[in-house]
Image (cartoon, rainbow, N blue to C red; front, side, top):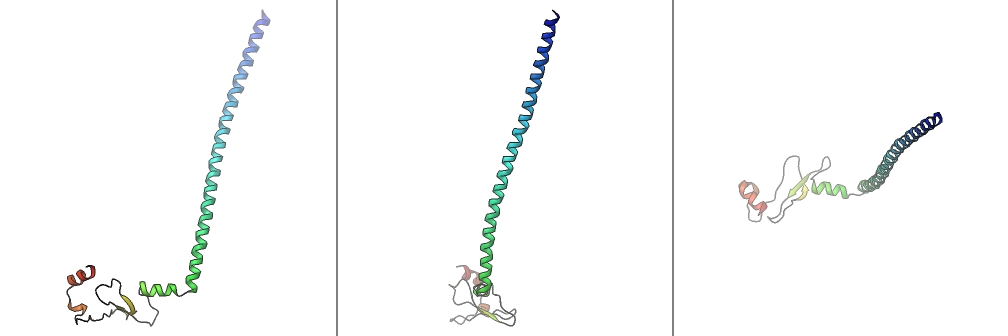
Length: 140
C-alpha cells in the first residue's frame, strides 16, 4: 500500500512538473512571438524610411541641378526682372501699360519710387480717372 501512495505522489509530482514546464514554454513562446512581430514592424519601418531617403536624395539632386542651371543661365535674372520688377543697383525700370486689355504691365525701367505710365491715345492719363473707374477697367 505504501508503494501505491508513493506511486501516486510521483505521478502527481511528474504531472505538476509537466504542467509547469508547459506553462513556461507557452510563456517564453508568447514573448518570442511578440518580439518577432516587433522586429518585423521595425524592419518594415526601416525599409520605408530608406525608400523615403532615396526619394528625397533624388529630389535633392534634381533641385541642385536646377540651382546650378539657374546660376549658369540668365533665365532666372530675366524672370526676376520681368515678374518681380527687380533691378540691379544703379539700374532703372519702368512699368508700361498699353491699353485696357493688357493684364500684366510690361517692365522697362523703374526709378526708385516713381512709376511711369504712358498716356492713352485718347489723351487721358491714369491720374485723371477716378479710382472706381480704374478698378472697373482693370477687371472688366
